[in-house]
Image (cartoon, rainbow, N blue to C red; front, side, top):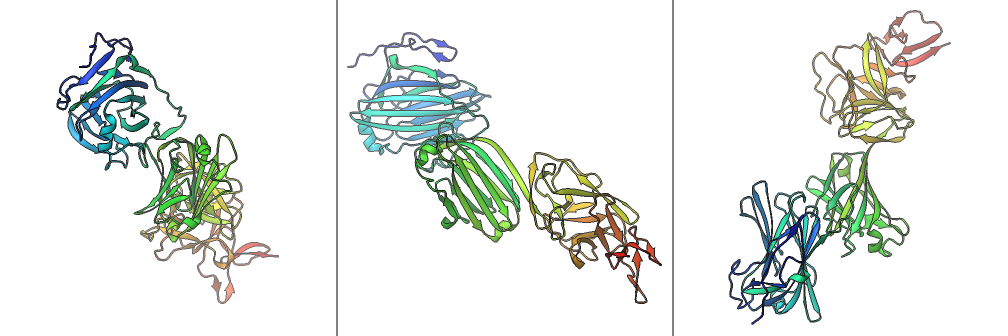
Length: 555
């Protein structure tokens, strides 16, 4: 019979357990391997403070088969609810929470899609972990190192079983609250027993990676695809966004890095860093890399500075991922795909990980506006607040007032809120990039309204105009019936009845926009002249006049 030295005393110092607190060894279970689950001797309750690591070493004795092995009970008591996770040596576990109810049974073979913060359980199994029957043979008189490492809210449970020249490693990751309170660990057995070597029991500081931005993924790098925090963004048609982050990989596989997912309704694209993807919009021939992309790929990805730019331009989707490794040259992955589905509507962009974590440093979104052939276009930012202050060679206007037949435009120089109609002036045919702002102000009194893609209601007592390029000029034309103004464009809505059929745009930015009465442009076959204030001139002299909706200079 084995000689067991029983516990003498226990000392806890600020959540750190003194290694002098126990006798030399502790028996957990029955030496005859006949104890029931959670019966017989139990280990001490080990209290682990935040960001500490508990390490236990013991010898295991397994005589039965099936689930007759040791298990660890990891728990936390807070907010009057008991949070428990049981992890068993044979790769099985379960969770109980909210008063001890069994709310989330766990099986390593079925619950590997990720974890829900409301029921936070996730497991990672090392590749060399053997089948249950083979593992039981390996457990007999095997040496085991059991560690419980806390990294913020994560608890990484690692068991390394060594017998002879073979070592088997199994890891679990579970999550407890926000990581600011102590947790408890206790070992138990079922029809088996272990002998803990207390001289080798330690609690030390955990090594915590530094995060300067937002954490995506698990710091333990044991969160499989989709596990851990993920971030969603909305990208409108005709817009782009840039995601800037540091990439840290577990180096398990080439794909143990960032993953980008785009969703539009039920259709989607998953793009991986290693020239692979899947989904409705995946086309292998559309994904290319720079020369030397895969040279020392895993090493270059660890700690690499990554910028991913996603651009929607008409019906084209362009994704460019630029990697700057800690050592070595910059390398890029490009995905270029054309489909009419990208011409309109919102796309959800999701950044996530696979056995890795990201330090998300910044996001930057931009929207594109293309100026018409005459240097003008209407524009509306349906999804984002936009900042026009830093856009060179582009001027944004709101329409603010009407006095008689003259309406005034005023320049917009700051960020405006979403769903704002604007008039833009720039170089004809040029596409401008407008930065997305965190917030913007409302343009009080603006008579330009954002298009919705639906027909204007044509409310009684209102007069509506849309921008056209008829007669070779950019003009606002009066609507006589309902039309659908596309999303991204704008229209004029005056809450009064106006007789003018068209509005000329004056580009000097001082007098604004002058309306010309289009009624009776000819009298008895003779052309009718109007001055720039819209007044009819019976006997025109030298000067600038409006005739048939066009500017005419008499010399």
